[in-house]
Length: 388
Image 1 (spheres, helix red, strand yellow):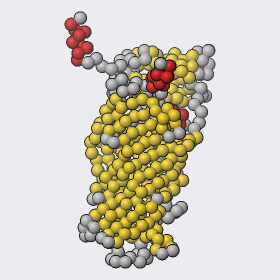
Image 2 (cartoon, rainbow, N blue to C red):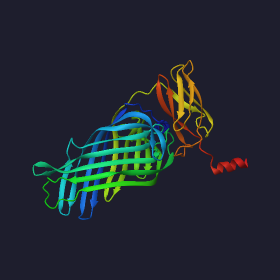
Image 3 (cartoon, rainbow, N blue to C red):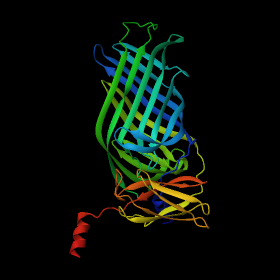
Image 4 (cartoon, helix red, strand yellow):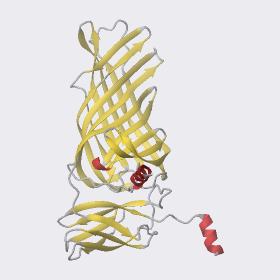
């Protein structure tokens, strides 16, 4: 009974949206299979299981304009120190060539934009480039150069966690228009001694913008890798995410695949955080709202504590106006706000919308907290209220 109670308590422990600071960084290990196949003019097959390691660094926090979702306040993270390794196989008819990435010349770079309010993904760009070498007898010879430029934009931003994460079984839908575009190139080395005719270089641009509805569900807390109690979120189609509050990120994301068209693809994508270096949260403590879930347009109190008599500004991200005030002589925060007259893009089975609120305390710092809106009454509830 005691063990069951402990598990139930752990499953019910809520975790709110984290606050990132400029300079926060994570070390990442990512694996995937990069490949293409063609049947014309001749049948070719190229498969390259790849592992890349890189650092993600928060470089700034700013309002950025998007083509279809307006202006969004985002963290920009750059991908640096990216190294690529792995080996694969090329085949054409009876010819088979084994090859590998040449290290350390093969590398990766890029950046992403992550919404401050809910960590939703706005824009992601990555570039992978390097040289492949094939073994001929006792030596390795240059075989090909590979370049992959990949950009993904989501409109609206793709919200993968409905903060605060608390209710096991909570689910939400995220209808987005996802644009995936870029170029995948393979240029065979003219100096390589091909046993037959050298195949044509592969140069495939891609640009697909499609509506897709992601479906997410929080299934509870479970161990994942080095983390004993991550928050597991299942995503359809075909992915899982494990959020870890201690690193303010997803400890692991797995299961995604991308089809670039004309036989080119990226499959079995898996991303793991191996370590992190994060700034301490500012002394803005115990932030909560009263009522905890106001209706749209309802007045709501922001409560908490900070440095005595400090000036405070709070704004619902995405709104033009906020609320200002001052902490009491004891450091208590009592700030009257009004809930916006809108939901977010993915109201869940647990609330009518969850919106990020940025709280800035002069001389102390900033912190983000989630304002959950009350779920609208169902048609059955409205009928019952009318009957009463």
